[in-house]
Image (spheres, helix red, strand yellow):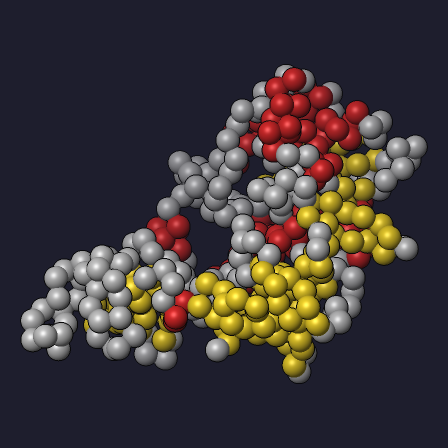
Length: 380
């Protein structure tokens, strides 16, 4: 963006350090900056895990230090309709959705963007670690320069119209530099720890939260040979690749040399003391399939198919070589992009671990995030 061009910019102030430094940098550049705090969740708001009250106080303190106005806006109804209902539907179907992706597309860059435009904003800004580049009249979504914090994965559903209005001032900085700036200018939240929870669940125990909203039917946990190892509490509460919270030890393998296997040890096909991982959900039979060993063949997939596609350029990329992530914080994996009856197919140079239906498969061309879709199935 040209330094000569000044805008009225509405910043989503979350109470965290990234959005606080975002507002500071924009003000430094001479923009007219207004802060908005988005409240997206109301259920159990007085719960010990719900930090929205404290987050607003932190955001208001930041606005005070920076000398900008802040408005508290409630998007809880939109959030429930556009994000949470889809989230529950996916979990009930046995998939593992990524609500942060939907929250960005539907709330932060739709409901919030619409509200900001009504306030006379020309641009909106958030503390995401990503960048936007205008090239020949088109807008590209780029990775954040800090590889440990890049959040383009969560923003891959943004459209040309949304990208044209978006600013990500911390996208070219490393997190350590953001904290240094916050401390230097005396922001009250300079040392506040990053939120790690899902956007509306916060830090609360996940299974306990889902328990309130999903029906669940216990069923068997079996290994790949069909031997029962224990009981699951409901397929919705597990995700592929999950290791913790399975509640199973060893198995008795009476066929192995005529004696029971030692508890906690693998029988044929796994090494001694190898941990168990969720490999599949047999939904028709309400059965959770687990395997021993991180690199078990059932956890590795050479290809996937995805639907509900969204491309930042407004059109799909040409078939051919690219790179993709099937989960956040994963290194880009070389792949071939293809299309079949409107669905995206990705075939990887190396098999990918725990490819999970409901998660996003996001396609990249170098530093450019092209978009992606929701994983429908792993392919053999």
